[in-house]
Image (cartoon, rainbow over the protein chains, first blue to last red):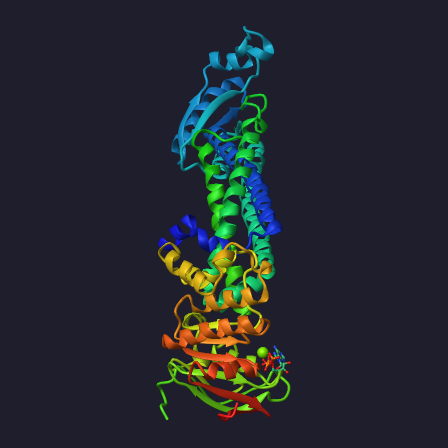
Length: 297
Length: 231
Ligand SMILES: Nc1ncnc2c1ncn2[C@@H]1O[C@H](COP(=O)(O)OP(=O)(O)OP(=O)(O)O)[C@@H](O)[C@H]1O
Ligand SMILES: [Mg+2]
């Protein structure tokens, strides 16, 4: 802990022993900034697709419809039988046959307000609400097929699954991107740190001659790169967040694309990016310095 | 024989840089508080021998002990501590060119983690002692040869080490300046420091003989001899 505090507070004199090195400093700042910027979008993408996947599967999984296509005289009996089966099916929270008024309301957009429902061969609809544990759709279908020949279970999965899968895949891609961004940043900072260590081989030699320990020399480099990554990433993060913030409001018509932002507490999550960047730089530079100083022994 | 009491002991030391042996079977003990000159023709291995003494090189054969520790067995942290106990004036001085003289002189303090705040007085005194108080903010490349040598000496003594090793400290300065540097070294010896100075300047050695009881080691033909009093 005290080592960490020393790293942040620093020692003004110790900072001066290594000359400020031009291009590695800029490289680190730029890499950390660019990576943080990208990271904000990857984070927004994976949060939004996670949200969408959750909402869609939640909304769609809850309600399924059972259609009874039967001649008028068998319809009531088959409906009753189907309801009985649904009641016995584990994972079905409730099942309810729609009244003719409700069915008429559903059809109204197509056929006008006063449809003579009784005279049309309209199937009876049963609304099935799924319990949290979910039911075995295949098993239910088989049973219905055997006992209620006119029943067709429409559980939306046919078109729901690919969408939810896509959203989940998108979230996974976002997470993978974040990991890759972190890895690329570690690689770039390692390169920059190695370049700085190589450029300062003479300085390191003099420091050793006057009795500097490896930990002291390493610290001078680690501190710099950590602080640079921290500040570069902070700037990149702010710019990224402004970019996300400028996206249009989430709207029904825009669907997924406009929902691509942060919500509520989600806005605080990108604040972690500079800290993680600093940590990545700390580890990368510590490793580079340890290796390099070992080689220079 | 006072084995075990000496600050630096070389025992049957041989060294080669990969080619033939530069020297072999050298043995010498530096007693605390003694003053030694190391002399010999250019390329005889004076710098090499000094590097063996402060652990910058490890002997190919034989053993080097500093403060009763075998230098070969030291890890890197222990080596750093050893460097703080032996002040070295390098033949080519070796400064950090981006730092002003005063900070270069204070470098051993800085890297050993001792803040400079409490040492400002000592630092100023030391700068005055080596006659550099006017030049404290100059950068090393702006210094003259003699100023560099004095700055190097000041840096070597700032941690008040027990041993001071100087490689050609009067290498590129005039007679006046070399006398001044010699007086600084003699003063340090009177303070109880062990001094080892490599030089091929015989007049410097003769001048020293009037001020201090100095012994002269000579490397030639791969051997180290205690030179006669006739120098
Ligand atoms: N790093 C090295 N690699 C190979 N050979 C070296 C190395 N350093 C020195 N030598 C050789 O070892 C020999 C002794 O070098 P050293 O520097 O010890 O001599 P010296 O007595 O200090 O000479 P001078 O009086 O010129 O300073 C020389 O022939 C030199 O060329
Ligand atoms: Mg030499």
